[in-house]
Length: 223
Image (tube, rainbow, N blue to C red; front, side, top):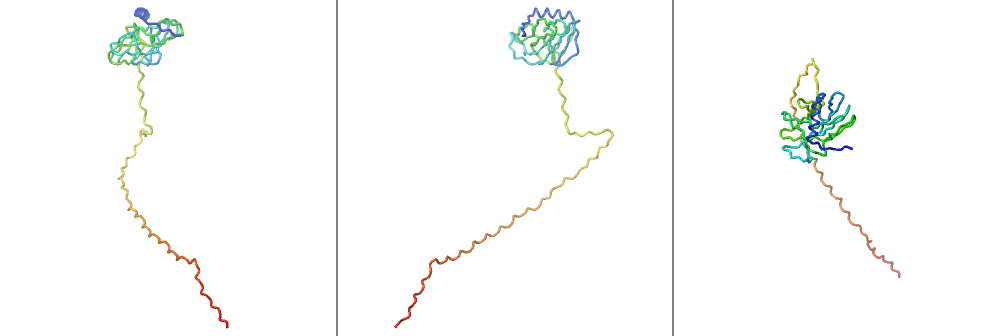
């Protein structure tokens, strides 16, 4: 379980003085989110800085500008390591530097306790940004920056697929222009003439349903 200990100005100053006296050596610059190592004799520690952004955390501190934060992880690679948060700075592209707020107590801060080999601690570091937005975070010895974390470069735009490539030494085919063709319209087809309506069949005369009466037959006169 990680225990966050507030960093006081006295503890941070003492740790910073010890760290500056040791003058560790560092590796090349890296990008935010990647690990940078500090070597001091037989002691090797690795810091990882990521997620540099405007902070919404509530601190017992009234910033003069805008409160920024970054997530910091310190790992003891070899030997015992003391995380020295006071050595961090944030820098803008115009060169303006913002010191880390190492004297402000925070439950989310980096635990300054000693780390045994293989142990690590993670917390936040804060900056009071009063000018241009910071783009990099540095770990300094006071005279020079030992580690620098920069934002990852923007990805190059993807090439458009389907483009044609021309080999060297080949002559491009001359472009031929064709006159625009005009579509000929067919004359409209007239609708077929309407057929004359058929006359209904003539009605048949009704048949007599009753028979005509026969004339009476006369019997021969008998004398």
